[in-house]
Image (tube, rainbow, N blue to C red):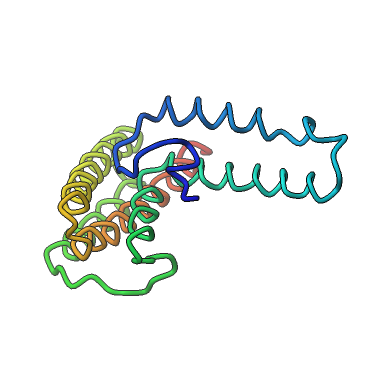
Length: 172
């Protein structure tokens, strides 16, 4: 059973996250180990495994990047741990510019405002890439969809680096 089936959802990039969370809570309640305390050890182990699967499925589907990667995995394209480079020169140049902009935030006149501005920029660009991924995926252009996920990974790293910088600046 795939993760979408587990939550009675159609495989899709766009999800009702509140519905997903509700289904998750219901399944967690149904498969809570306390409900099976009187059962055999084998049955308890199976329930624990099911609860772990429910947790993994929820964590994967609730985040757009991991959901996109999972959708591609269902199509036989596994990008986990992949080291393939991106051949889009314009994208790579924009990434270099973003990294330079990120490096300048710490020395900005108003670092908090610079963080907010950079965060908004990243959010918009991630949103654009997510839309592009969804369009390619829905059109079954899985090669393009995979390229968009590779690009989204760059933005995930930038977001993480921005969060680290923000923590460093706010700790002062």
